[in-house]
Length: 251
Length: 219
Image (cartoon, rainbow over all chains, first blue to last red; front, side, top):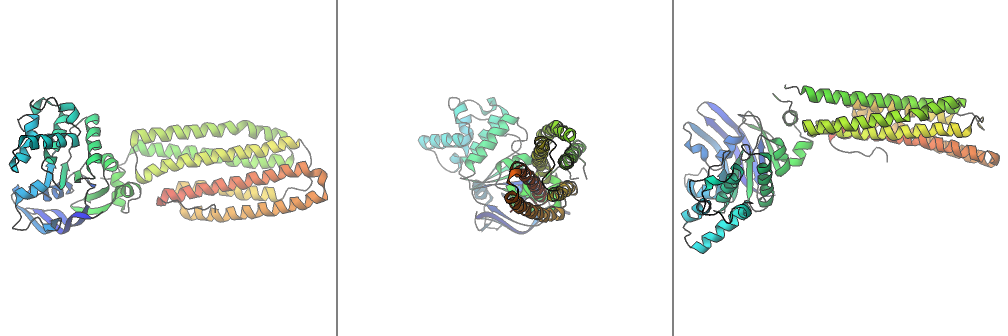
């Protein structure tokens, strides 16, 4: 699998705190990569680094390289808005806009300048189908997104992110607020779409990482301890710290 | 280090059940061969009767291991510890059946004296018996050296079985009237050779437990 995202000698500081230490990582294209590790290990920090969400945090300093398909995303000529069209994000809590289901999904394409109704309709339908939500909402598209359940809202957020056809979808604990059935639906949709998009997910649920990801990266204290094919990492990890963590014997 | 008390206790229980099973299996083999040597029908019947104990222990191991998988969702070596316990218990159960089959031969011989003194069979059984304890020790200590040593012991059992077959064949030409008895003794040799193979399987499983990779020690 070819890497689409690459970090080289990446260090990140929040003021004096050294949050990421010499991270050298390849993230394969059109596959799901999971970041695991205890709280404060740097996994969410790295995820936010991939679409420059950390820019908003005062005192953040970055050294080293993060590239997306060969483009340095911290280059001074890189526009953050265009970067975020290429690298979408879904958060822990569903955050639909206070608009209709249709408008939530059409929002991004409209910003990109698409205005023809038929074209928008097609994008909305395709995105909702990819997010495994179409069958449930196809007759409710004018209804408010807030009328959906939490799990449906999260899938709507995924549809919204997919509507701008990103290269990469970042998922930050995107099922941790959901019940097991909603979680299973999102895991299923990840399995469906990971052949078309690059997915990078942070999860505290190791079994979720084992179920849906192709590659797993274990972080500890800001360092990458081990990055391997998921089935290898969960069966024969090389580092004893990885084994302790995934076996629940860490701490 | 966080200790997973419930899980560690469960794994210990699993180990204890395996040791109990292995110890009973070893006794069964020794008693079965002893019954054959001394034409002791009472002892042979006892081995046959007690085979059920091994089946019950195997069930207990399957039940406990399944519960641990369901409730603790182990991964990596923790998961292999349970998978390997399943495999070992199934090997021990089969070995128990073979010990029972040896005791059945004692019963079928029904007190006959053997055409020749039994030498190779007790010798093979002695090696197989030490392989059983080594296999369990290798599991307890997660010691792959012992597992590899057992592959060599298994070769020795195979050679003894081969020479025993040649000897029985020669005897068969000399005393064709003893053919039925010799066939039974040949079967006993085969049973012990199979027991040693199962012990070697246990060694293979220990290597898998420790490394995550399966060697073929039986080839």
